[in-house]
Length: 344
Image (cartoon, rainbow, N blue to C red; front, side, top):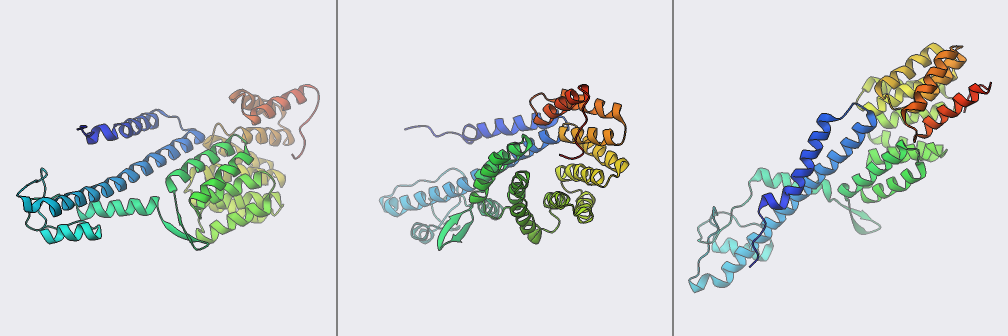
């Protein structure tokens, strides 16, 4: 007979992952991209643990049914079996458990198992509700798989951060197939779409999110950006300032300042634009696109030396980043006697 794994053996790989995340969290810098990646990995670990809680509760129920089934067949033979630390159940409850699939309750029997506490059962049910919720789609049941959906959400954000917007859209479409109606996934999908110029579809997604979650900061800043692209500057500023005032999502606050800098630049309010872009860089030092745009604002504010220094810093930060490449191209263009375009 094979010796079963202990709880420590079965769950040791999860303990290793959680300990590793704890070390990374303690030693990580404050870069916004790094924080976003850690957040998603912690979220995935949380969901995996919740899923294990659910599965263990179901296993506990099934073992309880095995116990009741053994009792049904062998109790008349004089055999006895009492699991260590077990609590008693009645013969009637044993038979009811076998027929109904429900846990047996306390009573008087030599063969019993310990029922989970009410708190444990509620926690398991809560985990189950998070990870598997039935929906009706075209008359067929559909299961929300939030655990796997979160993997595609993480992949989508990673691709947005690297400029692969088509790849991000594909990943986020899959996330929403697994977890329909997730506002975070819908907002990121809209972000990927508007970055490809699909402004109407993106705006529809953002509004859909805001209809359900009016203070969704990430949706607000994306609406602000679309309004900026449509040159509806005052409405854009209204949405961006609202997201900044909420300050509920660091990434949203960072981009709100960045987009507000673009709006102020478009209005030729250079001092305000510089202030907003510097604040964005303060919140996200690796947001190289903000450095590129700040250089442009400096240039048209007739602060040429500051513009060149800003592009040089952007060029040095990450040679693989497309915005670093644009900073290098701008420096070459300036060296050849050129000047940046007024707008992209």
